[in-house]
Image 1 (tube, rainbow, N blue to C red):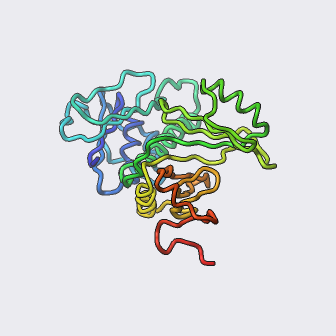
Image 2 (image 1 turned 90 degrees about the horizontal axis):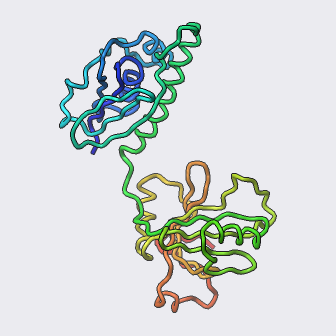
Image 3 (image 1 turned 90 degrees about the vertical axis):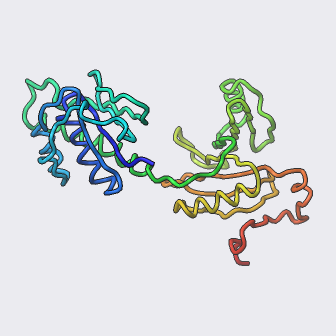
Amino acid sequence: MISRILFLCVANSSRSQMAEGLARQLLGSGVEVLSAGSQPSRVNPHAIAAMADAGVDISQQTSKSVDTIDPASIDLVVTLCAEEVCPILPGKVKRLHWPIVDPAGEHAELSEEQIQARFRTARDQIKVRIEILAGLLNVPEGPQSKEFHGSIRVNNLPESVRFYAWLLNTWPKEWTHRYATFIRPDLNLNFVLLVADDHSLHHDTLYHLGIGVADRQAVIEAYARAINADAHIEKPPRTTWKGTPLHELWLKDPDGTLIEVYARLSDAELALKPQDEAPVFLVEGTAPRP
């Protein structure tokens, strides 16, 4: 549980002060936020102006020495130095390093607008990092994965198989005229190449990602966890028999990329395959209506 965060830079005048103000706004009242420095000075007026542009008032914040901070009271330390030597808070504490170029660095030949632009850039870089941190502070427990799976479409299956056999330093475990599957247990990797089926491909093309879990029950538990995390459920848990028999759950990430949570069937489960190979839904009430 992270409830007290300390942002550090050298002068505690710009980057760490902006981080303190942004974190107070973005992380909410459940997290106490502090900032400090190894050579504290004053809150930079350009930092105050840049934050005011974003609707955050840091004019009442003050610069503080890291020596005044009790290490035992801090759950997370974030250092923001780039070229400088960052201050150190001793003790066992979770640490992150976000190297942000000091906007208050040498700027003798810059105009006032150029200087202010540097501060706005640093502010925006810090803001996105804190937005990511805000989402990580309360992540629900996820599926207990055992391997990582990725699949991509390819235009020429033989050529791609040869390339990935070289890249992964192994032959595919199996292949057909439609796909090839590479397994690397030492990497917990399951990687599949699929024919393009006339899809337009480019270097950003991704078919889907996946994680393997232990068994049927783990897929069902992943479904419950996905609901708890407000994840988009594309297809509820089911057992499929065509192709590679699997227990599977399909999700979508925020950008629409498909994610498959899957478990391979045991020999006993394979023996229960229905004659029509129709999928079997694993959670009551999730099967589509006829």
